[in-house]
Image (cartoon, rainbow, N blue to C red; front, side, top):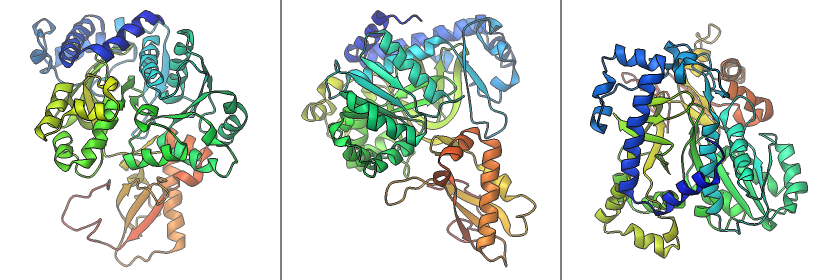
Length: 500
Protein backbone atom coordinates (compact mmCIF):
# COMPACT_ATOMS: atom_id res chain seq x y z
CA UNK A 1 0.00 0.00 0.00
CA UNK A 2 1.38 3.44 -0.91
CA UNK A 3 1.82 6.03 1.81
CA UNK A 4 -1.55 7.57 1.02
CA UNK A 5 -2.60 10.07 3.71
CA UNK A 6 -6.20 9.74 2.51
CA UNK A 7 -6.26 6.00 3.28
CA UNK A 8 -4.77 6.57 6.72
CA UNK A 9 -7.25 9.36 7.42
CA UNK A 10 -10.18 7.16 6.38
CA UNK A 11 -9.17 4.43 8.84
CA UNK A 12 -8.55 6.92 11.65
CA UNK A 13 -11.93 8.55 11.01
CA UNK A 14 -13.59 5.13 11.13
CA UNK A 15 -11.88 4.36 14.45
CA UNK A 16 -13.34 7.51 15.94
CA UNK A 17 -16.80 7.31 14.40
CA UNK A 18 -17.88 3.76 13.50
CA UNK A 19 -19.77 1.55 15.94
CA UNK A 20 -19.12 -1.97 17.15
CA UNK A 21 -21.42 -3.60 14.58
CA UNK A 22 -19.50 -1.96 11.74
CA UNK A 23 -16.23 -3.44 12.99
CA UNK A 24 -17.77 -6.88 13.47
CA UNK A 25 -18.96 -6.90 9.85
CA UNK A 26 -15.61 -5.54 8.65
CA UNK A 27 -13.74 -8.25 10.54
CA UNK A 28 -15.83 -11.09 9.15
CA UNK A 29 -15.58 -9.71 5.61
CA UNK A 30 -11.79 -9.40 5.82
CA UNK A 31 -11.31 -12.89 7.27
CA UNK A 32 -13.36 -14.62 4.58
CA UNK A 33 -11.82 -12.60 1.75
CA UNK A 34 -8.27 -13.31 2.90
CA UNK A 35 -9.00 -17.02 3.27
CA UNK A 36 -10.30 -17.34 -0.28
CA UNK A 37 -7.38 -15.38 -1.73
CA UNK A 38 -4.87 -17.54 0.16
CA UNK A 39 -6.65 -20.73 -0.93
CA UNK A 40 -6.21 -19.64 -4.56
CA UNK A 41 -2.75 -18.07 -4.50
CA UNK A 42 -0.60 -19.67 -1.77
CA UNK A 43 0.77 -23.12 -2.79
CA UNK A 44 1.48 -24.33 0.74
CA UNK A 45 -1.96 -23.30 1.98
CA UNK A 46 -3.60 -25.18 -0.88
CA UNK A 47 -1.74 -28.34 0.24
CA UNK A 48 -2.61 -27.66 3.88
CA UNK A 49 -6.33 -27.38 3.14
CA UNK A 50 -6.32 -30.47 0.94
CA UNK A 51 -4.60 -32.50 3.65
CA UNK A 52 -7.17 -31.28 6.20
CA UNK A 53 -10.06 -32.17 3.88
CA UNK A 54 -11.24 -28.57 3.48
CA UNK A 55 -13.01 -27.52 0.26
CA UNK A 56 -12.54 -23.72 -0.01
CA UNK A 57 -15.72 -23.35 -2.08
CA UNK A 58 -17.76 -24.50 0.93
CA UNK A 59 -16.36 -21.81 3.26
CA UNK A 60 -19.08 -19.17 2.83
CA UNK A 61 -19.92 -17.91 6.32
CA UNK A 62 -17.97 -17.04 9.44
CA UNK A 63 -19.33 -20.24 11.02
CA UNK A 64 -17.74 -22.18 8.14
CA UNK A 65 -14.51 -20.24 8.61
CA UNK A 66 -14.26 -21.27 12.24
CA UNK A 67 -14.20 -24.93 11.18
CA UNK A 68 -10.89 -24.45 9.33
CA UNK A 69 -8.07 -26.13 11.30
CA UNK A 70 -5.60 -23.62 12.79
CA UNK A 71 -2.08 -23.32 11.41
CA UNK A 72 1.09 -22.81 13.46
CA UNK A 73 4.84 -22.97 13.02
CA UNK A 74 4.97 -26.72 13.49
CA UNK A 75 2.15 -27.89 11.24
CA UNK A 76 2.51 -25.24 8.54
CA UNK A 77 5.37 -22.74 8.48
CA UNK A 78 8.23 -25.19 9.09
CA UNK A 79 6.75 -27.89 6.85
CA UNK A 80 6.95 -25.90 3.63
CA UNK A 81 9.53 -23.94 1.68
CA UNK A 82 9.52 -20.22 2.37
CA UNK A 83 8.46 -19.34 -1.16
CA UNK A 84 5.53 -21.78 -1.00
CA UNK A 85 3.99 -20.06 2.04
CA UNK A 86 4.29 -16.71 0.24
CA UNK A 87 1.75 -15.12 -2.09
CA UNK A 88 1.89 -16.74 -5.54
CA UNK A 89 4.73 -18.98 -4.44
CA UNK A 90 7.56 -16.55 -5.11
CA UNK A 91 9.93 -14.16 -3.35
CA UNK A 92 10.45 -11.88 -6.35
CA UNK A 93 9.19 -8.76 -4.58
CA UNK A 94 10.44 -6.12 -2.08
CA UNK A 95 10.57 -7.79 1.34
CA UNK A 96 11.96 -7.08 4.79
CA UNK A 97 13.01 -9.98 7.05
CA UNK A 98 12.90 -10.24 10.82
CA UNK A 99 13.53 -13.29 12.96
CA UNK A 100 12.28 -15.05 16.05
CA UNK A 101 14.77 -15.60 18.87
CA UNK A 102 15.51 -19.22 17.92
CA UNK A 103 15.18 -20.20 21.58
CA UNK A 104 13.24 -23.37 20.70
CA UNK A 105 15.40 -24.33 17.73
CA UNK A 106 16.49 -22.59 14.55
CA UNK A 107 15.11 -19.05 14.23
CA UNK A 108 12.25 -18.57 11.78
CA UNK A 109 12.71 -15.70 9.34
CA UNK A 110 9.43 -13.94 8.66
CA UNK A 111 9.28 -11.63 5.68
CA UNK A 112 6.88 -8.77 5.41
CA UNK A 113 5.79 -6.35 2.73
CA UNK A 114 5.86 -2.56 2.94
CA UNK A 115 2.13 -2.70 3.72
CA UNK A 116 2.82 -3.94 7.24
CA UNK A 117 5.03 -0.92 7.97
CA UNK A 118 2.26 1.33 6.67
CA UNK A 119 -0.31 -0.35 8.91
CA UNK A 120 1.97 0.19 11.89
CA UNK A 121 2.25 3.86 10.95
CA UNK A 122 -1.54 4.29 11.20
CA UNK A 123 -1.46 2.94 14.76
CA UNK A 124 1.45 5.22 15.63
CA UNK A 125 -0.39 8.15 14.07
CA UNK A 126 -3.36 7.47 16.35
CA UNK A 127 -1.01 7.57 19.35
CA UNK A 128 0.58 10.76 18.05
CA UNK A 129 -2.77 12.53 17.70
CA UNK A 130 -4.02 11.29 21.09
CA UNK A 131 -1.30 13.30 22.84
CA UNK A 132 -2.13 15.67 25.68
CA UNK A 133 0.44 18.03 24.11
CA UNK A 134 0.14 20.17 20.97
CA UNK A 135 0.57 17.96 17.92
CA UNK A 136 1.96 20.65 15.62
CA UNK A 137 5.07 21.22 17.71
CA UNK A 138 8.41 19.59 16.89
CA UNK A 139 8.67 15.96 18.02
CA UNK A 140 11.76 13.82 18.60
CA UNK A 141 11.25 10.05 18.54
CA UNK A 142 13.97 8.08 20.35
CA UNK A 143 13.77 4.45 19.19
CA UNK A 144 15.34 2.32 21.94
CA UNK A 145 14.33 -1.10 20.67
CA UNK A 146 17.10 -3.52 19.81
CA UNK A 147 18.33 -2.80 16.30
CA UNK A 148 19.08 -5.94 14.31
CA UNK A 149 17.07 -8.85 12.92
CA UNK A 150 14.30 -8.27 15.49
CA UNK A 151 11.20 -6.48 14.42
CA UNK A 152 10.70 -3.77 17.07
CA UNK A 153 13.45 -1.32 16.17
CA UNK A 154 13.07 -1.39 12.42
CA UNK A 155 9.27 -1.40 12.13
CA UNK A 156 9.09 1.51 14.59
CA UNK A 157 11.58 3.49 12.51
CA UNK A 158 9.65 2.69 9.32
CA UNK A 159 6.32 3.68 10.90
CA UNK A 160 7.57 7.12 11.86
CA UNK A 161 9.24 7.52 8.48
CA UNK A 162 5.76 7.11 6.96
CA UNK A 163 4.48 9.80 9.33
CA UNK A 164 7.27 12.12 8.19
CA UNK A 165 6.12 11.58 4.60
CA UNK A 166 2.56 12.40 5.68
CA UNK A 167 3.76 15.79 6.92
CA UNK A 168 4.17 15.28 10.66
CA UNK A 169 7.04 17.30 12.23
CA UNK A 170 8.71 14.15 13.54
CA UNK A 171 12.46 13.54 13.79
CA UNK A 172 13.79 10.05 14.56
CA UNK A 173 16.99 8.84 16.19
CA UNK A 174 17.81 5.13 16.71
CA UNK A 175 20.23 4.45 19.60
CA UNK A 176 18.84 0.95 20.21
CA UNK A 177 19.54 -0.37 23.71
CA UNK A 178 22.76 1.59 24.07
CA UNK A 179 22.21 3.59 27.26
CA UNK A 180 25.14 5.96 26.80
CA UNK A 181 23.86 6.99 23.39
CA UNK A 182 20.37 7.49 24.81
CA UNK A 183 21.68 9.77 27.57
CA UNK A 184 23.71 11.80 25.06
CA UNK A 185 20.58 12.24 22.96
CA UNK A 186 18.52 13.28 25.98
CA UNK A 187 21.18 15.75 27.09
CA UNK A 188 22.21 17.30 23.79
CA UNK A 189 19.44 16.77 21.23
CA UNK A 190 16.16 16.37 23.13
CA UNK A 191 16.16 19.92 24.65
CA UNK A 192 15.85 21.32 21.12
CA UNK A 193 12.42 19.69 20.68
CA UNK A 194 9.02 20.55 22.15
CA UNK A 195 7.96 16.92 22.61
CA UNK A 196 9.88 13.67 23.14
CA UNK A 197 8.59 10.13 22.49
CA UNK A 198 10.77 7.52 24.18
CA UNK A 199 10.19 4.04 22.77
CA UNK A 200 11.42 0.62 23.93
CA UNK A 201 11.02 -2.48 26.07
CA UNK A 202 9.24 -1.59 29.34
CA UNK A 203 11.97 -2.75 31.79
CA UNK A 204 14.71 -1.16 29.71
CA UNK A 205 12.95 2.21 29.53
CA UNK A 206 12.46 2.05 33.28
CA UNK A 207 16.21 1.53 33.73
CA UNK A 208 16.87 4.55 31.54
CA UNK A 209 14.34 6.67 33.42
CA UNK A 210 15.76 5.64 36.81
CA UNK A 211 19.17 6.91 35.73
CA UNK A 212 17.86 10.32 34.66
CA UNK A 213 18.27 11.59 38.20
CA UNK A 214 21.96 10.70 38.33
CA UNK A 215 22.74 12.21 34.92
CA UNK A 216 21.63 15.78 35.58
CA UNK A 217 19.10 15.54 32.77
CA UNK A 218 16.25 18.00 33.30
CA UNK A 219 13.47 15.64 32.37
CA UNK A 220 10.87 17.81 34.12
CA UNK A 221 11.37 20.39 31.36
CA UNK A 222 10.59 17.91 28.57
CA UNK A 223 7.13 17.03 27.30
CA UNK A 224 7.82 13.30 27.40
CA UNK A 225 5.64 10.42 26.17
CA UNK A 226 6.31 6.69 26.45
CA UNK A 227 5.63 3.97 23.89
CA UNK A 228 6.29 0.35 24.92
CA UNK A 229 6.13 -3.07 23.26
CA UNK A 230 7.23 -6.71 23.56
CA UNK A 231 5.91 -7.54 27.04
CA UNK A 232 3.17 -6.75 29.56
CA UNK A 233 3.42 -4.58 32.65
CA UNK A 234 1.22 -3.58 35.57
CA UNK A 235 -0.60 -0.31 36.16
CA UNK A 236 1.67 0.19 39.16
CA UNK A 237 4.60 0.12 36.74
CA UNK A 238 2.86 2.65 34.46
CA UNK A 239 2.21 4.98 37.39
CA UNK A 240 5.81 4.68 38.57
CA UNK A 241 7.46 5.62 35.28
CA UNK A 242 4.94 8.32 34.34
CA UNK A 243 5.37 10.03 37.71
CA UNK A 244 9.16 10.09 37.34
CA UNK A 245 9.03 11.76 33.94
CA UNK A 246 6.16 14.13 34.79
CA UNK A 247 3.73 12.75 32.22
CA UNK A 248 0.50 14.73 32.27
CA UNK A 249 -1.94 11.97 31.37
CA UNK A 250 -0.85 8.28 31.46
CA UNK A 251 -3.89 7.25 29.42
CA UNK A 252 -3.08 9.60 26.55
CA UNK A 253 0.70 9.71 26.74
CA UNK A 254 1.62 6.04 27.13
CA UNK A 255 0.87 3.05 24.92
CA UNK A 256 1.88 -0.60 24.96
CA UNK A 257 1.89 -2.46 21.64
CA UNK A 258 1.11 -6.14 21.17
CA UNK A 259 3.34 -7.12 18.26
CA UNK A 260 5.32 -10.00 16.85
CA UNK A 261 7.89 -10.94 14.25
CA UNK A 262 5.12 -13.07 12.73
CA UNK A 263 2.98 -10.18 11.53
CA UNK A 264 4.17 -6.88 13.01
CA UNK A 265 2.07 -4.45 15.03
CA UNK A 266 -1.06 -6.45 15.88
CA UNK A 267 -2.93 -4.63 18.65
CA UNK A 268 -2.32 -1.61 20.83
CA UNK A 269 -3.43 0.09 23.99
CA UNK A 270 -5.81 3.01 23.63
CA UNK A 271 -6.94 5.52 26.26
CA UNK A 272 -10.11 3.41 26.43
CA UNK A 273 -8.38 0.07 26.97
CA UNK A 274 -6.10 1.53 29.66
CA UNK A 275 -9.11 3.09 31.37
CA UNK A 276 -11.02 -0.22 31.32
CA UNK A 277 -8.02 -2.09 32.72
CA UNK A 278 -7.73 0.41 35.58
CA UNK A 279 -11.44 0.24 36.33
CA UNK A 280 -11.25 -3.56 36.44
CA UNK A 281 -8.53 -3.34 39.09
CA UNK A 282 -10.92 -1.32 41.26
CA UNK A 283 -13.81 -3.78 40.87
CA UNK A 284 -13.16 -7.46 41.55
CA UNK A 285 -16.37 -8.67 39.89
CA UNK A 286 -15.69 -6.62 36.77
CA UNK A 287 -12.14 -7.98 36.66
CA UNK A 288 -13.35 -11.58 36.89
CA UNK A 289 -15.96 -10.94 34.21
CA UNK A 290 -13.42 -9.43 31.81
CA UNK A 291 -10.53 -11.80 32.53
CA UNK A 292 -12.03 -15.05 33.87
CA UNK A 293 -8.93 -17.21 33.20
CA UNK A 294 -6.44 -14.83 34.75
CA UNK A 295 -6.39 -14.91 38.53
CA UNK A 296 -2.74 -14.03 39.08
CA UNK A 297 -1.33 -12.21 36.07
CA UNK A 298 -2.88 -8.91 34.94
CA UNK A 299 -3.52 -9.27 31.19
CA UNK A 300 -2.61 -6.69 28.61
CA UNK A 301 -5.83 -5.25 27.19
CA UNK A 302 -5.55 -3.83 23.68
CA UNK A 303 -7.69 -2.93 20.70
CA UNK A 304 -7.09 -3.87 17.08
CA UNK A 305 -8.09 -2.71 13.61
CA UNK A 306 -10.01 -5.40 11.66
CA UNK A 307 -8.88 -3.83 8.37
CA UNK A 308 -5.40 -5.07 9.31
CA UNK A 309 -5.85 -8.16 11.49
CA UNK A 310 -8.46 -10.30 13.25
CA UNK A 311 -8.41 -12.40 16.42
CA UNK A 312 -10.36 -15.40 17.66
CA UNK A 313 -10.28 -17.36 20.88
CA UNK A 314 -10.24 -21.15 20.68
CA UNK A 315 -9.67 -23.39 23.73
CA UNK A 316 -8.20 -20.44 25.61
CA UNK A 317 -5.66 -19.74 22.88
CA UNK A 318 -5.53 -16.76 20.51
CA UNK A 319 -5.76 -17.32 16.77
CA UNK A 320 -5.03 -14.50 14.36
CA UNK A 321 -5.81 -13.92 10.71
CA UNK A 322 -3.82 -11.28 8.89
CA UNK A 323 -2.65 -10.28 5.45
CA UNK A 324 1.07 -10.01 4.82
CA UNK A 325 3.57 -11.16 2.20
CA UNK A 326 3.17 -14.40 4.16
CA UNK A 327 -0.59 -14.61 4.89
CA UNK A 328 -1.67 -16.21 8.14
CA UNK A 329 -5.12 -17.80 8.49
CA UNK A 330 -6.35 -18.86 11.94
CA UNK A 331 -2.73 -18.84 13.07
CA UNK A 332 -1.93 -19.99 16.60
CA UNK A 333 0.63 -17.44 17.68
CA UNK A 334 1.22 -19.11 21.05
CA UNK A 335 -0.54 -16.72 23.42
CA UNK A 336 -3.39 -17.35 25.85
CA UNK A 337 -6.13 -14.77 26.05
CA UNK A 338 -9.51 -13.75 24.74
CA UNK A 339 -11.44 -11.46 22.40
CA UNK A 340 -14.41 -9.12 22.87
CA UNK A 341 -16.31 -6.72 20.69
CA UNK A 342 -17.02 -3.31 22.21
CA UNK A 343 -20.69 -4.14 22.84
CA UNK A 344 -19.73 -7.09 25.04
CA UNK A 345 -17.33 -5.00 27.14
CA UNK A 346 -19.98 -2.31 27.51
CA UNK A 347 -22.50 -4.95 28.67
CA UNK A 348 -20.04 -6.23 31.27
CA UNK A 349 -19.89 -2.74 32.78
CA UNK A 350 -23.69 -2.49 32.72
CA UNK A 351 -23.99 -5.85 34.49
CA UNK A 352 -22.00 -4.40 37.39
CA UNK A 353 -24.21 -1.29 37.58
CA UNK A 354 -21.68 0.87 35.76
CA UNK A 355 -21.97 3.05 32.68
CA UNK A 356 -18.79 2.95 30.63
CA UNK A 357 -19.75 6.07 28.68
CA UNK A 358 -20.52 8.06 31.84
CA UNK A 359 -17.29 6.97 33.50
CA UNK A 360 -15.30 8.01 30.42
CA UNK A 361 -17.04 11.39 30.27
CA UNK A 362 -16.34 11.98 33.97
CA UNK A 363 -12.65 11.20 33.32
CA UNK A 364 -12.55 13.61 30.37
CA UNK A 365 -12.11 10.74 27.89
CA UNK A 366 -15.44 10.80 26.02
CA UNK A 367 -13.66 11.43 22.71
CA UNK A 368 -11.67 8.18 23.05
CA UNK A 369 -14.54 5.71 23.30
CA UNK A 370 -13.36 3.83 20.21
CA UNK A 371 -15.63 0.89 19.40
CA UNK A 372 -12.84 -1.26 17.96
CA UNK A 373 -12.73 -4.89 19.18
CA UNK A 374 -10.53 -5.88 22.12
CA UNK A 375 -7.98 -8.62 22.63
CA UNK A 376 -6.45 -9.52 26.00
CA UNK A 377 -3.24 -11.47 26.46
CA UNK A 378 -2.07 -12.96 29.74
CA UNK A 379 0.27 -15.90 29.21
CA UNK A 380 2.30 -17.84 26.67
CA UNK A 381 1.02 -21.27 25.67
CA UNK A 382 4.59 -22.58 25.88
CA UNK A 383 5.03 -21.06 29.38
CA UNK A 384 7.94 -18.89 28.31
CA UNK A 385 8.67 -15.60 30.07
CA UNK A 386 9.88 -12.22 28.81
CA UNK A 387 13.08 -10.62 30.10
CA UNK A 388 13.97 -7.23 28.63
CA UNK A 389 12.12 -8.15 25.46
CA UNK A 390 13.79 -11.56 25.07
CA UNK A 391 11.68 -14.71 25.19
CA UNK A 392 13.11 -17.22 27.68
CA UNK A 393 11.96 -20.78 27.03
CA UNK A 394 11.89 -23.43 29.82
CA UNK A 395 13.64 -25.91 27.51
CA UNK A 396 16.78 -23.77 27.33
CA UNK A 397 17.06 -23.67 31.13
CA UNK A 398 16.17 -27.34 31.52
CA UNK A 399 18.89 -28.46 29.09
CA UNK A 400 21.49 -26.45 31.01
CA UNK A 401 20.51 -28.01 34.34
CA UNK A 402 20.64 -31.51 32.87
CA UNK A 403 24.25 -31.18 31.68
CA UNK A 404 26.54 -33.99 32.82
CA UNK A 405 28.56 -31.77 35.13
CA UNK A 406 25.44 -30.78 37.11
CA UNK A 407 23.45 -34.05 37.17
CA UNK A 408 25.01 -35.27 40.42
CA UNK A 409 23.95 -32.06 42.20
CA UNK A 410 20.57 -31.21 40.65
CA UNK A 411 17.37 -33.09 39.80
CA UNK A 412 16.79 -30.95 36.70
CA UNK A 413 13.58 -29.47 38.11
CA UNK A 414 13.20 -25.71 38.32
CA UNK A 415 10.62 -22.94 38.33
CA UNK A 416 11.41 -19.64 36.63
CA UNK A 417 9.67 -16.30 36.86
CA UNK A 418 10.31 -12.62 36.17
CA UNK A 419 9.40 -10.78 39.38
CA UNK A 420 10.15 -7.15 40.21
CA UNK A 421 12.19 -5.79 43.10
CA UNK A 422 11.26 -2.82 45.31
CA UNK A 423 12.41 -0.44 42.58
CA UNK A 424 10.13 -2.24 40.08
CA UNK A 425 13.17 -3.57 38.20
CA UNK A 426 12.53 -6.97 36.67
CA UNK A 427 14.92 -9.91 36.95
CA UNK A 428 14.97 -13.58 36.01
CA UNK A 429 14.55 -15.73 39.11
CA UNK A 430 15.19 -19.46 38.80
CA UNK A 431 14.32 -21.74 41.70
CA UNK A 432 16.36 -24.95 41.40
CA UNK A 433 15.86 -28.31 43.16
CA UNK A 434 18.93 -29.96 44.73
CA UNK A 435 19.46 -33.69 44.86
CA UNK A 436 19.24 -35.41 48.25
CA UNK A 437 22.43 -34.82 50.18
CA UNK A 438 23.62 -31.90 48.05
CA UNK A 439 24.59 -28.69 49.82
CA UNK A 440 24.38 -25.26 48.31
CA UNK A 441 27.66 -23.36 47.98
CA UNK A 442 29.15 -20.44 46.03
CA UNK A 443 30.99 -22.78 43.68
CA UNK A 444 27.79 -24.61 42.72
CA UNK A 445 25.97 -21.30 42.39
CA UNK A 446 28.55 -20.06 39.88
CA UNK A 447 28.62 -23.36 38.02
CA UNK A 448 24.84 -23.40 37.57
CA UNK A 449 24.69 -19.72 36.63
CA UNK A 450 27.44 -20.16 34.03
CA UNK A 451 25.64 -23.16 32.54
CA UNK A 452 22.33 -21.32 32.22
CA UNK A 453 23.85 -18.13 30.82
CA UNK A 454 26.01 -20.17 28.46
CA UNK A 455 22.99 -21.99 27.08
CA UNK A 456 21.01 -18.77 26.66
CA UNK A 457 23.93 -17.12 24.87
CA UNK A 458 24.27 -20.11 22.57
CA UNK A 459 20.62 -20.58 21.63
CA UNK A 460 18.83 -17.26 22.21
CA UNK A 461 19.84 -14.40 19.94
CA UNK A 462 17.68 -11.79 21.71
CA UNK A 463 19.17 -12.71 25.09
CA UNK A 464 22.67 -12.64 23.61
CA UNK A 465 22.11 -9.12 22.29
CA UNK A 466 20.87 -7.93 25.70
CA UNK A 467 23.72 -9.67 27.55
CA UNK A 468 26.28 -7.86 25.39
CA UNK A 469 24.88 -4.49 26.50
CA UNK A 470 23.29 -5.02 29.94
CA UNK A 471 24.77 -8.26 31.37
CA UNK A 472 24.04 -7.35 34.97
CA UNK A 473 20.32 -6.99 34.20
CA UNK A 474 19.87 -10.37 32.52
CA UNK A 475 22.06 -12.65 34.66
CA UNK A 476 19.65 -14.98 36.51
CA UNK A 477 19.08 -14.85 40.25
CA UNK A 478 19.34 -18.44 41.52
CA UNK A 479 17.58 -19.85 44.56
CA UNK A 480 18.41 -23.43 45.61
CA UNK A 481 15.83 -25.58 47.39
CA UNK A 482 16.06 -28.95 49.14
CA UNK A 483 14.70 -32.03 47.39
CA UNK A 484 10.86 -32.16 47.37
CA UNK A 485 10.45 -28.67 48.77
CA UNK A 486 6.65 -28.27 49.04
CA UNK A 487 6.60 -24.71 47.67
CA UNK A 488 8.15 -25.48 44.29
CA UNK A 489 8.90 -29.21 44.03
CA UNK A 490 6.18 -31.12 45.81
CA UNK A 491 6.36 -34.85 45.10
CA UNK A 492 3.60 -36.50 43.10
CA UNK A 493 2.45 -33.47 41.09
CA UNK A 494 3.37 -32.24 37.64
CA UNK A 495 6.31 -29.86 37.69
CA UNK A 496 5.37 -26.23 37.08
CA UNK A 497 8.21 -24.70 35.07
CA UNK A 498 6.96 -21.12 35.24
CA UNK A 499 5.85 -19.35 38.40
CA UNK A 500 3.76 -16.21 38.83
